[in-house]
Each structure stands twice: as C-alpha cells, then as structure tokens.
Length: 319
Image 1 (cartoon, rainbow, N blue to C red):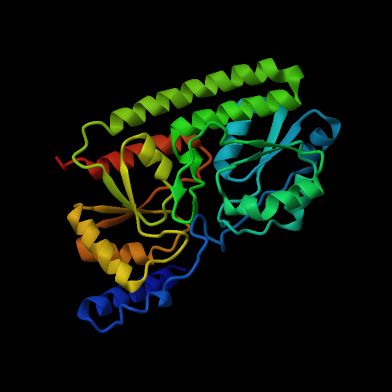
Image 2 (cartoon, rainbow, N blue to C red):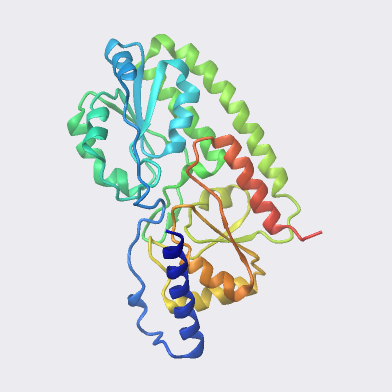
C-alpha cells in the first residue's frame, strides 16, 4: 500500500513537472478532471453490525435504534440519548459519498425508529433516503440541519455541517427534539443529557475562538473542502484543491502552487482516506508539509480541539 501511495505521488509530481516545463498540454484539463469520493475512501469501508444483545434490546423496546449518515452524528445521538439509544452510521469509516449500503446494514436499518439525516446536500442521502423509508416506513426521519445556514459550494450544497462546533450545537438540539418526539416518556432525560453535552460544545467553541484569535494569516489550504463551515464560523479562509469531488487538473495544480506561494502556505491538510497525490505535488513545489486531520472522528470534542490547535499552529508565526 505504501509503495502504491509513493507511486501515485510520483506520478502527480511528474505531471506537475511536465506542466512547469511546458511539455504537457494545459488545454486538456479533462484528462485528470473526474469525479471521486474524496470525503472518505472506498477500500477501507467497514460496518460493525448489531450484535445479538443489541438486537434483543431493540426488539424488547429497552433501547431505540437511531440511524444517521456520518459517524460524528452517532456521537451526538449517543450523548443525547444516553443508555436509551443505539446509534449506527450508514456511511461507515472509509466509505464515500456514493457508498452503497450492504444487505446487513439494510437489515439493521429496518429496525430503526429514527433516522437523523444531515439534510445538507449529502449525496448519500439523496441517493438512498427514499429507499430507506420504503424499507422502513415506520421510521421517523428528522433533519439535523434545521436552523443552520447552509453553504453553497460549486454546483451543490456543502454537506459538512458537523465540522463547525457552532453548527454541532444546533445539530445536538435537533437530535434532542427528534428523540423527545418519538420517546416523550424519556424527554427529561434527553434534555438533561443534551444540556450537559451542549456545555462541552460551548467550551469547545470558546477554545477554538481563542485558538484562532491573533493569527498572522487566516488562509489555510486543504485537499478536500471538508472545513467550509468551520472556516465561515471562525473567520478563516479555506483554500480547497478539490472542488465538486474532482481531482485538480495539471493546469489547476500550477494555479494552486502559485496560490500557495502567494498565501505563504506551509501546511496542506488532507484526510486519512483521501489520495495525497495532488497535495504532495503542491507541497513539494512550495516547501510545505502535508498533514492529516480527520473530519470524521467519533470522539468529536477531543478531535475538534486537536483540529483547532493544529490549524492555529499552521497559521501562527513560528517562534
């Protein structure tokens, strides 16, 4: 696998070198301009099925099965629902925007009482929600993005609402309301759980505001544009190499190299499951470092603290 990544990176660097030397025709952008599932990879996808104990708890009504689209949502559901809920993510770790759920996932989903959809333009939901509700017509569908001002990105809406703690607080409130609606007998417990978690998120929000104050620059470069809501809500400027799920063309690589130089970019951020070829090509030409941050980690508060500290360090002048 490591050799494969090195080989792909070498090809990207070669393409960039050809562009710089004038040997590559810049008018044929479509050669490398094709769609990809860059929010998560494909080869690493894995779903942990419900076990026998969980199935018994759901069947008996002891616990409520709640489905969601992405892994961070399951953290919100579990924090609000506490011991009353079991949460599953229909897009497992390593899967992409156009992931096709397995038969076992569909069997588990058929037992869900609630689906917390992102409602923010996630292609997975556009492709699957009708099928999910046809399979499980008794399942309530609630919208996590109610009350969030969505961001238009290229030809579509940016779905990554959870990457801003300010948006996450609204998502948690929506999760509370959905659980209270389907299980009013435990609404007081859900309210107490939600309030406790909202305090954590408010502290996280304050920590990020402090981290991003007094920066020497507010421009940061990423490969996949997963941090649009974070950038908007904390006064940063995300420069994304990939747009609308497409790899940069050789011509675009040159433009991003120039943009990185103009903005004194020293770090290019990527995700674990995303190809680093384009980011490596740019980094090599501006003496920058490629660094991994994860928008899909389940330990939401801890991960976002780390992301905030990492971003701030890349934007602050070195001692």
